[in-house]
Amino acid sequence: MIGLLGNITGLRLIESRHCVERKQIRFLRCNKKKWKRLKKFNKNPRNFIKVPIKKVFVTGNTVICHPVVAGDLRRELRKSGLM
Image 1 (cartoon, rainbow, N blue to C red):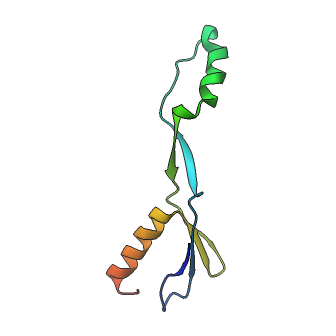
Image 2 (image 1 turned 60 degrees about the vertical axis):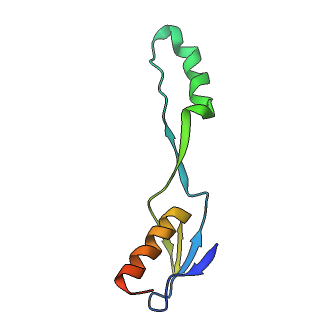
Image 3 (image 1 turned 90 degrees about the vertical axis):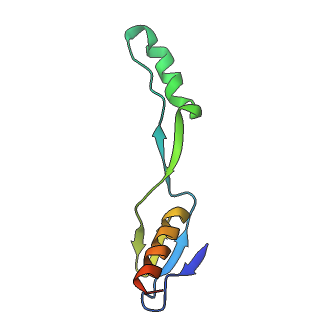
């Protein structure tokens, strides 16, 4: 989604649901016997969750961020009276 952040800021906001990072939630204890299983464990997508990146990327007059972060940004702008 593309929107404007406000009349004063003049920045274009691009919301991308692809601004996520993988975070491991399950860990396997590693020893020499389990080494082969460890490789398979790390590839298993059930052991990871996707978390929105809390950073915003600014290029020129364009801001790229996750929709959750964009909502937080809009809320802060409304509080400050810029939007």
